[in-house]
Length: 402
Image 1: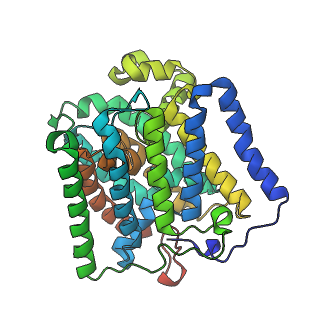
Image 2: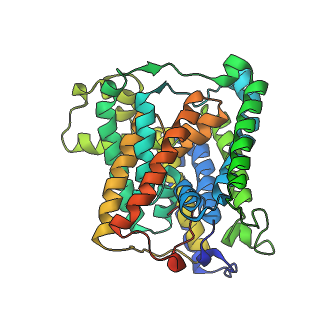
Image 3: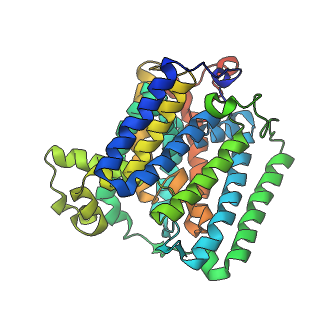
């Protein structure tokens, strides 16, 4: 789950790298603090998410590819543990309905044909685009230009999906279901944990392997700043920071709404009139479109993740702009980005908002998302060689997010 570039990296002495890393954190942080003080805390949380994602090389796309291609379930096992841990953290707060006097709500969404189709094409997009929602953001912060292209078309695809969402919502659909509310949180958590444990045991019985060292750091304390983080440590950090997002923002960690909003703001700047779209005409989307980007919590968190990954890469001495491959990989980034954005809008979220936060909120739609996204990832893995994305086994990259 960790790239070879992460291994054996000593923490550089205090010098220009540390100053650049501090600037990467402080400049946008000060900007957000001055313009929208109430969003500063979620920005800090998001920086922590970016650090954990980058130093843990945590990505869902690579984990699923390793599952299907290499019969390696290490990344998937971490995801299972992360969901269980986050669910235990979420349950008391969601049951109470508030945290420190602030109302909180889980990541709940409807269950229907549109959700399943959206998750399926999102899974294909993960493999063609080279990352998931979180993986695209942190890889962009690390200097991956192909993932930046994926991110740009992710925004375009999300906007496209928002224009079509009214049609998809007219297809058969069931209102949001919270297993915690319907069954009680204790039975719901037990059922989800049992399902994940059963899936783990079936995969192990089928011969899928888990590589050692999930908890073991590379040595000393330097890994905290320079990486690599043990995968389970990174997963635990993501669960804790997701919980911090819940009690701070009033809702769990999400990603793709911010990207959809960026696409809509770009379209409006180019002359598009939101009055013609049912999605953007009124309600929360209309108010978010009218306000500055930094007034939107999800947008601030998306920016914070990129900033956190950038600071982590600079601090560890690994930041460099790079572009992988030729026309084939670039075309895959365009197509993958469109699928990621469109699919996430239809599915009411990505691997973070729909699956991670959704499952931690005991939402039934999270499990439909997973059931539909896995076949999409399988198909995406089969399509990757058509775009020149996979080399021979000996030179395959071991980075989960790409």
